[in-house]
Image (cartoon, rainbow, N blue to C red; front, side, top):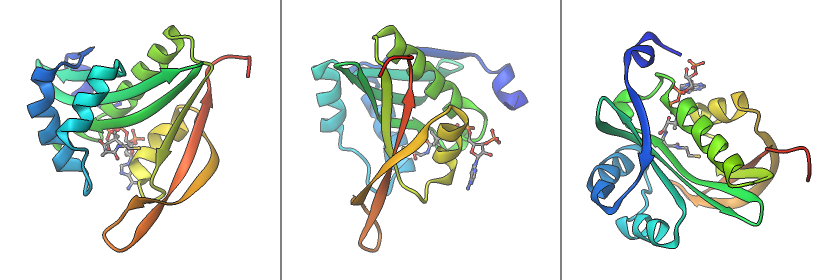
Length: 158
Ligand SMILES: CC(C)(COP(=O)(O)OP(=O)(O)OC[C@H]1O[C@@H](n2cnc3c(N)ncnc32)[C@H](O)[C@@H]1OP(=O)(O)O)[C@@H](O)C(=O)NCCC(=O)NCCS
């Protein structure tokens, strides 16, 4: 973790509709195929875990997770481009893992592009293992890209 993060004041708080302008700015800045604002609105309205990471009172990242029947799924995890590589992605992931445990999830799943080395790094470091692959899952600049399915056991029971 870098000195920048150590000095920064990091706060996690629930996302609201009022955050979506900032969220969409980050979303469009990081993904070639960003979610629409409607997808975020749906996540809020169905009651998914939608959390904002604030650094020094500014929206700096967010995480979206569903928890159902003992399974947590990370659906989105983003850090503002100019703030990446300072440990905040790992912090946000750790927060979602703790939250999933609070919601009694036994296992956590997510999909990631195999080309997304930065994301794979934080997932591997947090103890996720590869459990499968979804062929041609993501749109890509040229054709489609597979998704790697990662899982992390959160409790002893399966
Ligand atoms: C994935 C993401 C959330 C990580 O956030 P972050 O704040 O950069 O993460 P961290 O700083 O905690 O850790 C990133 C690590 O990846 C490493 N890294 C960066 N680029 C890398 C690369 N090309 N290959 C391998 N590792 C890389 C960094 O060095 C850092 O490791 P370190 O702490 O050992 O130095 C962020 O990059 C992001 O928002 N990406 C765009 C959205 C996205 O892809 N989300 C995940 C969807 S599954």
